[in-house]
Image (tube, rainbow, N blue to C red):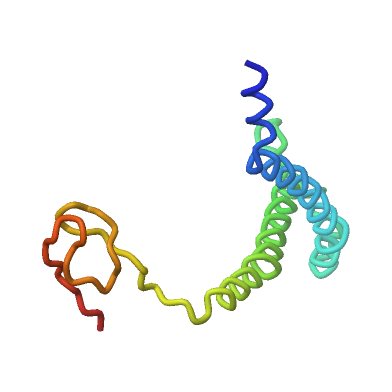
Length: 138
């Protein structure tokens, strides 16, 4: 019973996921601090208030923390910006370089009759001997 649990925990994707969650939490703290300590005061200085967290709105004795919500929105936008421009765009470029010269044409195709894998350029199935219709791509 414990062997199966150990194998599950030591599987590569579980360990990778755990590392990603820890790094994501640390990255979130960095972005939140950057937003709260650097960008929010700059934006607030333009508007006359150095920190948005002091913005509150009272409604029937309850306080709505509008400033904290604005800080969260700024943190989200900064996080999305950083992830897109520093992770997604470079990974797309790397993937494009790796796949450069590769074609989308598979080396094999499935026979329409017996569903066996045969070479893509074959005109007859080597298993059931049925003729294969070759589709031309434009």
